[in-house]
Image (cartoon, rainbow, N blue to C red):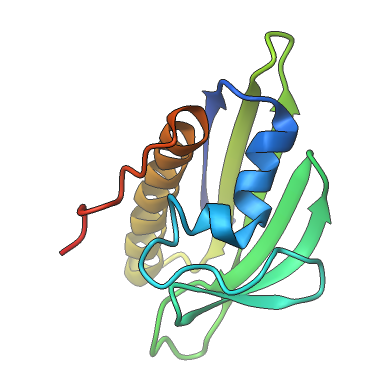
Length: 147
C-alpha cells in the first residue's frame, strides 16, 4: 500500500471553464504556478515545466473529465528517484458548477514519503482554493503570499 490523499471541492463555473483553468498555462499561471509559470498546455505524452524548475509528465487528458500527471515524488536528491501520480477529475453538476477531485499517490512508506505527501496535500488544497477564487472572481490569492 502506498501513501496518498484525495481532496475535492465545488467551483461555481461550468466544467469546460474549470478544466481550461488547469490545462491552459496562462490561466494556471494566474493562480497556481504564479512563481515561474507553466511553460506549456497539458497535452498527453509531453513533459511541461511548472515554476521554471519542476518537470510534470502529462499521461492523460480527457477534455472536461480527467487529467493524469506524474512528477518526482520525493523531491530533489531522493535516491533512487520515483514518481507520484496526480489524478484530477471534473464532474459537471446540475447547478452549473463543477466538482473537482485531486488525488495524489505513490509515495514511499517512510518518513520522507509521509512528509512529502503531507506537504503536497497542503499544496493541492491551496491550489483548489486558489482556483475557485480565480475562476469565480478573478482573484489571485497567491499574489504576495510568498516572499
